[in-house]
Amino acid sequence: MYDSMMAQKTTLIDPRRAAETRKWHQVDAKGQVLGRMATRVATLLRGKHKVEFAHSTDCGDFVVVTNAGLIRLTGDKLSQKRYFRHSGYARGAHVTPMWRMMEKDPRKVVTLAVRRMLPVNRMRDRQMTRLRVFVDDKNPFAPKAKA
Image 1 (tube, one colour):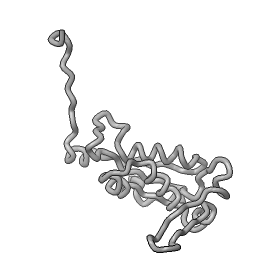
Image 2 (cartoon, rainbow, N blue to C red):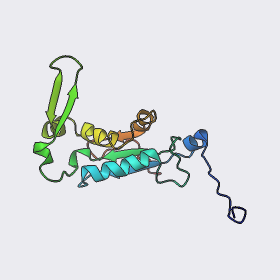
Image 3 (cartoon, rainbow, N blue to C red):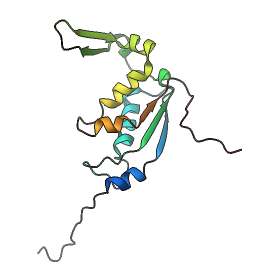
Image 4 (cartoon, rainbow, N blue to C red):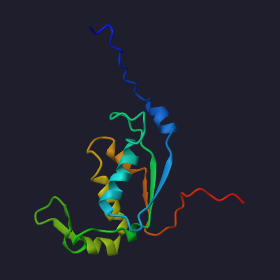
């Protein structure tokens, strides 16, 4: 019975080859909903858009996000959403409303949204190093125009 079936093969990409084939993607966050944009960026960072994707190999690309200060939020997230962190000491909880985070540094809002979309494993920090977020549309990683 199994002789007549075609043998299936699993091909895994070599990590060195995955690093050599990385590409740069630019995402303009102007007017985009934060969560939807963060899932697209997380997909690019993981490499799930590639044919040779493997869960155990870091085969994602570089992503540059511009206009982070102009993202769109749905509902009342700007006034209701809160970011929680804890120092580890007694009474060390810090709760920051989203409007204050957006005023202070909108790059951190985008970075946290993307970071929390990635799976918690050993590759997450490595994938996050390939993310660049800018508040305005100035991008030092843009390809230079040839004169």
